[in-house]
Image 1 (cartoon, rainbow, N blue to C red):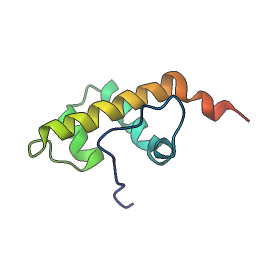
Image 2 (image 1 turned 120 degrees about the vertical axis):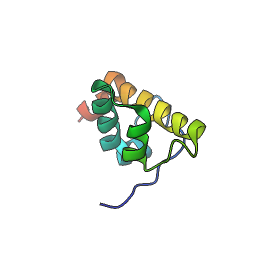
Image 3 (image 1 turned 45 degrees about the horizontal axis):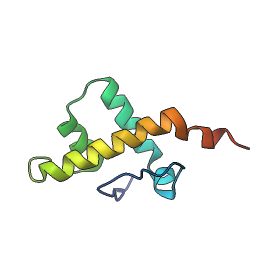
Length: 84
């Protein structure tokens, strides 16, 4: 599996975007990691392929915005997949 390109900020639109469609597996991985209380820096290294020591601000932004989007998908975004 190839490395997928990630934006620094996950979408914050009130609807499912093409970016969400490409990265929904990433969202589920982030939710699993958060549930397990995994260290965010390790998560960023594994999921996003980033070195949080080299770019701490950027790494935290990537993590925070993608985790927030993953939570939005669980709370509201999933409804998109229920529509015929």
